Structures are given as structure tokens and as C-alpha cells.
Amino acid sequence: MVGVVFATASAEAQPFPAENFGDTTDIPVPADYDGDGITDIAVFRPSTGTWFVRNQFNARWGQNGDVPIPLDRDGDGRPELIVYRPSDGTWYSNNPATGVVESVRWGIASDIPVGRGAYWMSR
Ligand SMILES: [Ca+2]
Ligand SMILES: [Ca+2]
Image (cartoon, rainbow, N blue to C red; front, top):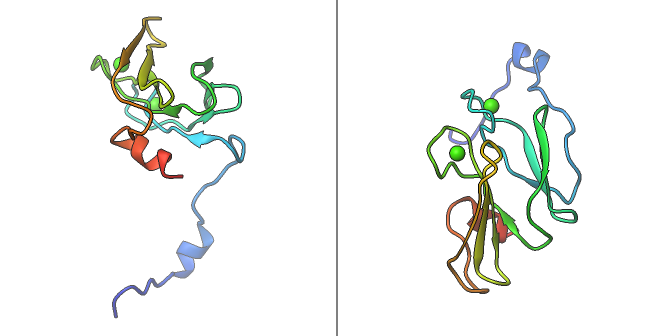
């Protein structure tokens, strides 16, 4: 048979771990924010433009309508906080490790950022 999943008694006894983090309107932005090789739980809250990285930091970067995309642009193993703002076709980057902020206009309002952003824009 194809597409049938069988659960064993041990699987039922060990459900996957779950916890609440974030709000119903938050956008998940998991990434390895501290560079330890383990993806960290994180959300972007559009209403306040705040990134909440569990057990690490909160940072205001972005605004309602932005598409949050954590990407490691400088190759140090930790992502920069990046938002794409469709209203002005601009990417805004904030490196929490160095404090360096940058922006580049690349796109127009009707564009969809590729990669992770494409998924979130379709929500
Ligand atoms: Ca990590
Ligand atoms: Ca980086």
C-alpha cells in the first residue's frame, strides 16, 4: 500500500514535543540565529515589526506588510534580519551581531521575493 502510515505503541507513547511560542498572526522565521548548528524557534510579528527569537533576543526590524526573510548574507553562520518591503521594492537588512544595517532597492510592488519569501507572500 502507498500512503499508509502505521503507528507503533512506542510512537504513540512518545509524541513529538510541542510548545506555544508566538501569536496567531506571527510569521514563523526559524533559522540558526546563534550559529550553533541548531535551528532556533523564531517569529516575526507584523503588527509591531518585531522579531522574537526564543531564548535569545527580540528586535524591532520591519513593519506591517514586510516579508521577513532570515538569510546569512555575510557567511558568518548566523542570519541577518532581512525584510522585503513590497510597497517600495526594497530589501532592508540588519545584522544583529555587528549592528550593520543596509538597504537595497531591488524589485517593484508586484514582485514576490524568491526563496522563503515566496512561501510567506502566498499566505
Ligand atoms: Ca541555534
Ligand atoms: Ca550573517
